[in-house]
Image 1: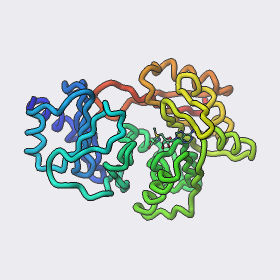
Image 2: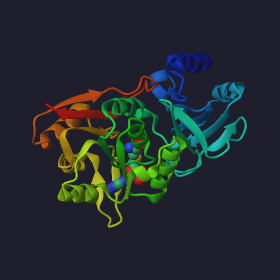
Image 3: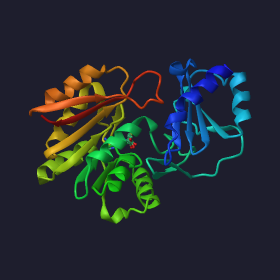
Image 4: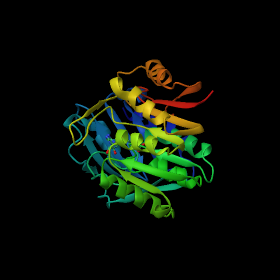
Length: 298
Ligand SMILES: C[S@@+](CC[C@H](N)C(=O)[O-])C[C@H]1O[C@@H](n2cnc3c(N)ncnc32)[C@H](O)[C@@H]1O
C-alpha cells in the first residue's frame, strides 16, 4: 500500500505550481485505493473514506508525513465534522490558495470545506474568458469561488445562493483577495426565482455558472432533481445571457451520462450553440463524475 500512496503523491507533483496549494492527492480507484480520498489544503490533509476504516498501513503512512490530518467518513451522510486523525490540530478557519487567489477553508463547517477542487480547471477557464467590465452570474455559488475568479479578471460578479452563511463566506473570500464586496452583487434566495426575476427585468450577463446540487428542496418544499429539472434551469439561464454570452453548465450527478446531459442542455437552448464537455482536473484520476459543459453561441 505504501507504494500506491507514494505513487499517488508523485503523480500530483507537476500540479504543485506557485499560487496553488490545494489538490486531491488520492482519488479512490484511480489510484488503486478504492473508497479512499485525500485532499491537501495548504498542507492540511483531509482524508475521506466510504464504508471503511482507515487501513492500518495508511494510518502509519499518514502519521509519518507529520501533517495535520483530519478524517471524514462519507458513509455518515457527511453530517459529522471531520475528526483529527494525526498530526497537530488545525487552526480554524485557515487559508488555501489556487491560481494565486486565497480561499477561506474550514474542516469543521459541516457540508464541505470551502472550495470544491474538482472545479479548478473550470475556474481557470472562466477567468480567461472574462475581461474587465464584463458580468458573471454565479448561481448555487456556495462560497463564491467562481465569483472570486471573476473579480480577479476585472469582471463584476453576482453571487447567488440560498444560504446567507455561504454568501458571508463568499464576501470574506473577496476580502481575502483585496476585492471590495461592495463593488459586486450578492443575492440570497432560490436560483429559479432569481433567474425568472432577472429575465423579467431584462437583466443580462456575459457569463452564467450553473452548478446545482443533484437534489435540493427549497423553503416551500419544492424539489429540484438534476435528471429531471436541469433543462428548466438552463432555459431560465439562457433567457438571462447577453448576446455572445457563455454558460457553464455543470453537474456531479453520477447517474446522468455526459452526452445525455449535453443533449438536455442543447435541446433547451432554442438558439444555435456550440458545446464542449470539459474533462476533470488531472488529480481526479477516479470516476469522471463531474460533467462540465461550456456553451457558446455557434
Ligand atoms: C454543489 S454546491 C455549489 C458549489 C459551487 N458551484 C462551487 O463551485 O463552489 C451547491 C450550493 O447550492 C446552494 N443551493 C441549493 N439549492 C439552491 C437553490 N435552489 N438556489 C440557490 N442556491 C441553492 C447550496 O446552499 C450550496 O451552497
